[in-house]
Image (cartoon, rainbow, N blue to C red):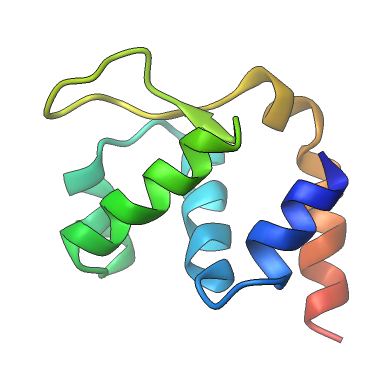
Length: 92
């Protein structure tokens, strides 16, 4: 999981936005539209990042319909301290 997070957060251009999404969803579940408003990002941008995060088992929704709420996966919840550690190293 550590390598996946390094790649998704620090190793790609969309990493900072993905980090913002993970932090937001850690606080409470959101759907794509709510995240778009909360983070002031384009709906399609959020949708793209959610697909990437879902493909890597970072978030899940359990639904495939419009308005689906996203949660951090159990695996991500367990590894959230690693995510925070990566963020702290990126800021140095």
